[in-house]
Length: 235
Image (cartoon, rainbow, N blue to C red; front, side, top):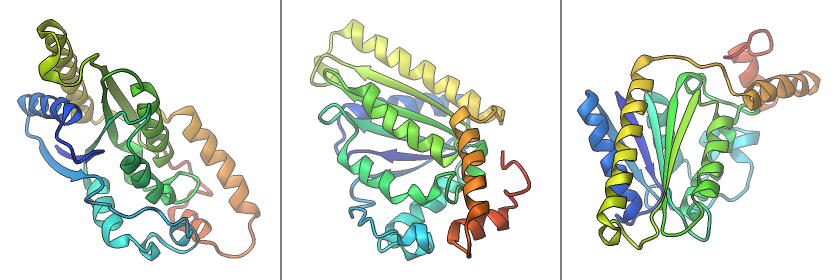
């Protein structure tokens, strides 16, 4: 099982520790290989909003030397794990920058068919509050990518780090992480394809109608024609 991990912070703190617990438990279930990226090191540039990826091709992104190798690993993987600590009640800035670079993968633009059977998990930790908002942003983007099934776990520690948490609370969260890891492994290993999310079905229907009315050949329209999505349901 090939799994890509997008680490939303370079710090090997609470979220990193939680992710290691999750990873270790997955490996007890079967053969799992992990390819990890750390932000912002592996994608250090802010999106310029130049529309090159949308109007032309993702290869035209001025930061394609960073974005394309990561995209290649994501497309090849069986599963994706996103992680982020909470900064100011939301995901880290590095995660937002990462997501900005892949808007061309939205279903309304040029989603990869491989994403329609892919599973994802989002892990977030916080000392006080904010995991729900941080996770929501990532899940929204994953749905727009066309990911088939997304699960998540937010951990509110009420402590600065794992070491300062009461032993009972730490054991509780470690148990939740391990249980979630086992369920996620089984989900990916099953190969089960779930019905698309409602928002995904709506976006396909809405965008198909828009593209049919467009004149001229745009990058999105050409891609949809190549995929045959004007005549068939991509899911």
